[in-house]
Length: 266
Image (cartoon, rainbow, N blue to C red):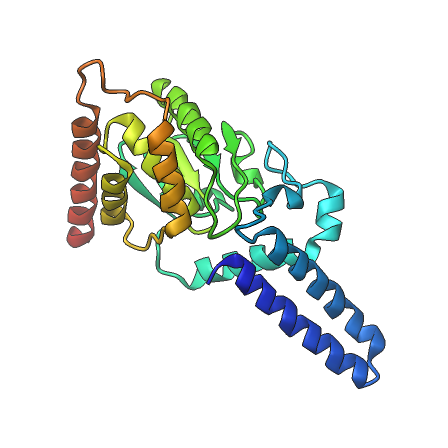
């Protein structure tokens, strides 16, 4: 279920709670519910594919939210943070996965424990989650995107170029969304193609799925990647003759096997 339908359903439930409380004479208690319902309705409309307006929440390029946004959209912003933290606590899924050497994809890094090693450069694909203190000193790029929606092809291209520049400086790269399932995976697919690790985004998706089986790209992600592939400008980094894909994948596989051996030994 897409975010617009899910949040629309939430708006409906909240409105019924409001109506019930008001009809029971609990008018004062019902006010927060009608307010939360209106906020959810607004988010539902803005996140619809036909509108797709992530700038509604006002997330800035440095990953922070202005005061007006925190006040106006508090019911939604704090709900998604609480839901995200709760889901991560009960899930056995790793917070991030290394796809190839120094290139990671995963969920919202709300603490140092959920951040890959090596002081990575971060590409944030969320419009609803803030940049936390844990990553306040890391190189950072934000491409705000609604959950279950896809970054625009131009945004994917900008993210890929930025990541390639950081990778050329030997910086690890961490691409994240809320859980590391959709938005971030779409950008990662493009990056793997640009790095020469994958021939195309479809092959890149298979590589990512091998290392992070829980990914769930939808038709919007694939459509955006297809458009990016048709008009991409960023050259592959291995065109100079260096087989980057073989080196990166080999190193990643070796480390993965080493970790498995260590676990068996324990």
